[in-house]
Length: 611
Ligand code: ADP
Ligand code: MG
Image 1 (cartoon, rainbow, N blue to C red):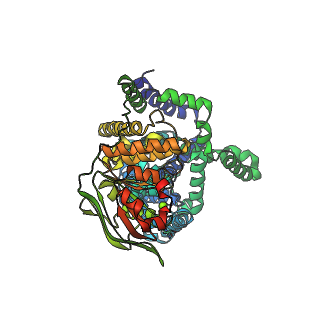
Image 2 (image 1 turned 90 degrees about the vertical axis):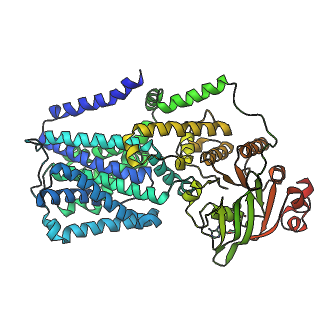
Image 3 (image 1 turned 30 degrees about the vertical axis):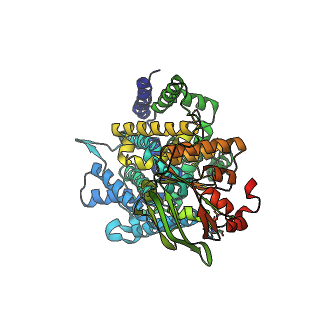
């Protein structure tokens, strides 16, 4: 089936379902319930952006839902704002509150973040109850108007259902687009590994606030639907902490990270209590027990269970068979075959330094309390060279790389990269200035695919923002194709072609190291920092790594290498710096270092000649 027909299939089915549903379900009671389920589902879609995509626990979603409902209700009843304009007001005021919550919670994670969001929810509740002049206090707001189209009022549940359904479809469409975009990948990178996200070029502060704002905006629209449909009445107790917990359960139960899952969770938990009412007094118990059982047996929610079923896998393969990404990967593979494979022969060394200094470090120090992990180190790395940084365990090598890449703020000292002072700058800024790194303990975005990992490496060379991503504008599609081409080139360079759609953490250890390298190279760095790249590799893999290091160097990338494998270090390095207890004890060429008595005593030992 061609792509055009496939892309029309889903909208066609949706139109039929939306048009037919009110014909089959004629009871106002059930239609109102469905409208309520849609309002909850939209709030869950929002929660899924902050929790599922970005990995930040929020227990204030009902508060944002309430902010949306109250904003539109107040503006339409007191100031006569048109009801349709209320949607935008609800979205933006809730999103603004999302930003307000996002800023103070940036430094928090896990339980502390959850507690801060609970506090925020309580503040909103208190404002709704106590600011009577604005919100009418506990009495709530009555007679909230319905939307109109011309002279037709969308009041009865069947007509309001169309408004709700269209909102849900558009917002779901946006959330799905978002997941497969530059912005969505930045969110997921933060979820998977915040530290690596920063050093890969993602401004984690900006994207976390964006996720909170967007999530709150979605809840705001859900609140608008709640206020202007159903009973046309709102009061503070609807938007309580309990409701936030219910929204959280709906999202997780539906399948954290899945937009469709959020809708399934939202709908199921709204309708199920009604279905179970025949159980009379024990219905709440059965309902709660059902939730607990689902959580135990489906840790990844309903979406997780369904997506792992063989039929879903087959359906997904069929659906993706002619997706742009799949076709591009296939085209790259076949052009490689036609050209007889592009793996270059091993090049002993045709890169040579220009002599110009790329990185200068002066008096660099990092103290952890009384421990002087790095204590006044000076060094220079010349463009085009491979420089090694060696020393015993705990001598401060990783700490230096952490300061260079912006993860630690130096206690003292200066760092300059190509003339720009970078000490204390944020990791993503340093990445955009031309530095990339790998980690001693591999830090991949494990749940994402191999290709997505490398695409995130291209983050600082792409531009697509929130709205371009959500709307999937042509400019965004063109940019995606370009960064995918670069990512595929990098995967081929390290020899991971053919693994594009594998999950990163399913790769064997050696390949995970290569993937981290491909991700770092995707940002086109001038300087590449490698923290023990040969650790855990077998002899053959280490030999391949040596070849790769030379090839990287041939591409014009300067390398600063931390490594314990002395054979490798002596083989590849133009220049070696030796650390001990945070201080530089020697530097020079491999021959000079091998003969240096202080280095032999501190690190190499007497058998260095055979090392
Ligand atoms: P290397 O990479 O050379 O093995 P590190 O740079 O990891 O050494 O560590 C140098 C010293 O700094 C060690 O004593 C280590 O325990 C300490 N250190 C590193 N990071 C931290 C930290 N975040 N907090 C406290 N001490 C640290
Ligand atoms: Mg280390």
